[in-house]
Length: 155
Image 1 (tube, rainbow, N blue to C red):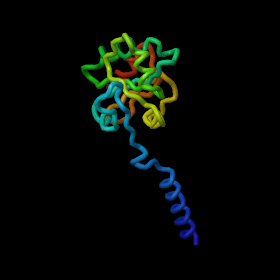
Image 2: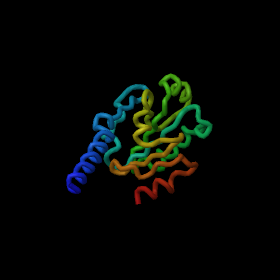
Image 3: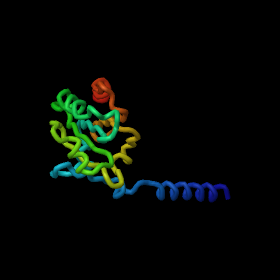
Image 4: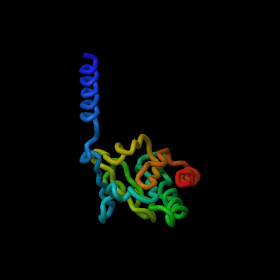
């Protein structure tokens, strides 16, 4: 009797796990590139060192985001792929914000359901994500000097 009860409990736990698991299709995301070009998709962060900054045009902490992104690109661009993701904004508002500025990294739009930001637990912006061979090594608020955080992730 005890064995049958244990099997039922185990089966119930497995069923709950199966029903609450994220399906591979739901885990997928695709972010269009501002201005056109190849979209950002999971394979782009699956290998090597990839630095992503998630930001918005309206965040008071992101007023100098172009300078900060350009600094990260200058410091790490020869060792990592540096990308930016704009959270929940239209291409028009991002174009307006960037007009007259020279951003050295590609911009991708996480609009709609914000699948990328949800998947990677982005809770505040601007956010620094560092992926090492597809694994999130850093997920913190973007600091004025992110170099120690990035360096710590790759060493």
